[in-house]
Length: 381
Ligand SMILES: Cc1ncc(COP(=O)(O)O)c(C=O)c1O
Image 1 (cartoon, rainbow, N blue to C red):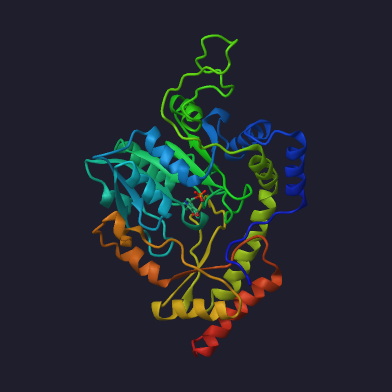
Image 2 (tube, rainbow, N blue to C red):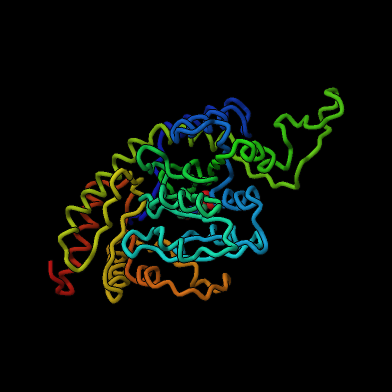
């Protein structure tokens, strides 16, 4: 089976985990500190603004809390977003206002967001679809002009930059995912939270660890002789990662350039082989100055063919999928929006295998499978 997404883990990760086991301390500690510092350097942000978290979904829930969003507030998000984004907004009591996206990039445009703005809009929760940056500088400027907060779900865009600035760092808050299907994995789950405002960032330590404001467990203790006493500043959850996770993440971060290079090559091979097929469209190029993470490779084709192609590939042992089913069509959100581009894209788009573990033979199999499908149906080359 050729997977659509797949992590790459090897001896270096195993050795890093073995070292943590040998050290006897598995919990949050030096490895996690080092992972946060290395990730801050990767993004080009100050270390205190970054905090590791249990997963990206939790990061979006935390973002709602940090920004004080709730009842009566509206949060705009592209309907082509991960379900955790919609849940984070709805669970805090705010109203998710789903906006349309560009038909080809599946990213929200400035116009899409402007069309969804109302006097009740308090925040925008943006995704960079497939790792290709949305027009983030323009959207950040719009958010500033309208006094609206900007949160970036950067789960797809771990190595996406616009004019040298990392996606996820343009707004008030950015979140990343290291779950099992991401480019960089930290074992099974993990994430990172960036908070631009230093005062707000200082709150993340307590907010991700039971409301305790210091790590030692001595917070608020009446006397340092009684290290079991404490005070809390909020009724917070426990959203931290541990040194096993961080040890894997550290190795993966070092390997990230190698992963990206392979993904770039696979992406380019698909482009060359598939671009000339006039019954499908390949992904558009990123805008000038924008660098992709190459997280998805998506084809767009007539809706009558899309599902048949998926089935044809599956029968050849090639998995494909569509990310992300439009949230305005999910009944629990109660949206009555009509978002024609997203609805059309959801019928026409198929993500095909793209990961650094694909061999040249795998890539050839995918290309051959798509070609064979076209020939079977007598479609023009
Ligand atoms: C765009 C996007 N955002 C957020 C998430 C959630 O990440 P996590 O699994 O770390 O909660 C995912 C996971 O698939 C995702 O694809």
